[in-house]
Every structure is written in C-alpha cells, then in structure tokens.
Image 1 (cartoon, rainbow, N blue to C red):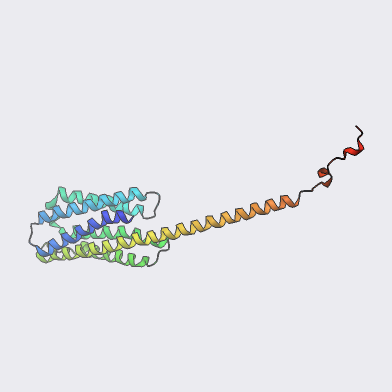
Image 2: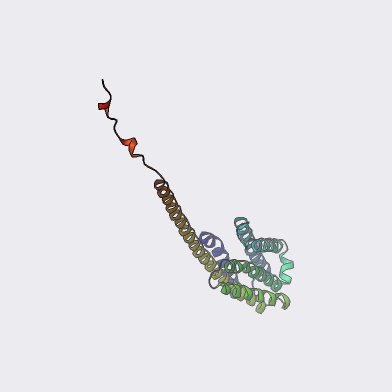
Amino acid sequence: MLRTIKNGMLLLSIAYILLGVLLLVMPQTSLLWICYAFGVVVLATGIFCLTRYARLRGQSFAAPFFLVAGVITAGLGLFTLAQPQVVASFLPVTFGLFILIDGCGRVGSAVELAKRRGERWWVMLLFSLLSIALGVLLIWQPFDVAVSVVMLCGVLLIVEGAVNLGCAVYTAMELRALDRMADAASTAALDALGHALDEAEAEALNADHEGVVYNAESTEVPDDSHNPP
C-alpha cells in the first residue's frame, strides 16, 4: 500500500501544490491554460481513484467511496479538457467541486480506519470535513473570475495537496500497523491451537496406554522338559 501511495498520491499531491503555486505566482495567466492544467490533474485523480477501487473492491469498506469519487472526478476532468471556455466562466465552482469530491473520498478512508479500530482516525475525518467545507464555500459563494479569486483557488489547491498527502501517508502507515497486529494475533492463535492439539493428542495416547492389559503368561517360555523326545 505504501508503494501505491508513493507512486500515486505523492505525484497527485505534488501536482496539486505545483498548480496552486502557479496560480499564486502567475494569477494573470490565461484561464484556458489553467483549465487545461486543472483538467489533467483532475482526470489523473479520477483514474487513480478508479484504480484504487479495482484493487479494494470486495475487500474494503472504502471501495465504494473511491468508485463514486473516481467516476465524478474523471468526468469532471474530461469535461474541463473538452470545454475549457465553459469551465473558465465558473472557475471557483469547478475548483470547489473538485475539493468537495476529494474530501468526500477521504471520508471513506477515515471510516475504514474507524471500522478497523485505528488510532486517531478522527484526525483524518476532521481534515476530510475541512476539505468538504472549503469546497462547499467555493460552490455556494461563487465569485467573479478575477486575480484575487484565482489566487484564492491557488491557496486552496496548495492546502488540499498538503492535506491529501499527509492523510494518504498516515492512512497507509496506520493500515500497515493494523495489518501487522492482525497477523501477529492470527499467528498467536494458530500457535495456541497447535499446542492445544498436541496436548489433546498426548492425553489420548496416555489414555490408550492406561487401558492396555498385559498378559504375563504370554511372555513365558515353554518348558520342553515335560515333553519326552
């Protein structure tokens, strides 16, 4: 799982941060270029979520969250690349929708940690709710597309990238620790069962030996002196 985090979420989180820095440094950059870059990042996020769903399907409670987030995010990315002019007209709403979906996807990881009794799962849930709140703010409070709004989207993308990276690494480490604990408990249970079976087998052998009646006469050597030649 950590390898998946390093190869997948690490690259996506860095992409969030780089795109956010680009919006902060060059807020007057053409909105079409911003939309194209944003579409690529969102589409990659959707593909990653769908890949996670394919790996976790039937094995994790969080799988449906990745499926929903992957389908919506991939669709949003494709729409952004196909219609950048339309997306540019309501850029804050598009950014807000992406952040909202990304936060909802992390709720599944938080619930999975809580279900497996992981420690501090509520930290993941709080960060997820923070992303959801930021996304809702951008969706329900649309601003005019201006330099200040573009910079605000950049700040939110940087925050989202940092939060996403931290939550992903924490979840992977926590699940790996839980897997190790489960393996240790399973090994201990198998060892205890093996000892119990050995003791039961030994008791059964002792019981069999105690029930044997030895015939002393059967061990006597016949006396040939009573038999004349």
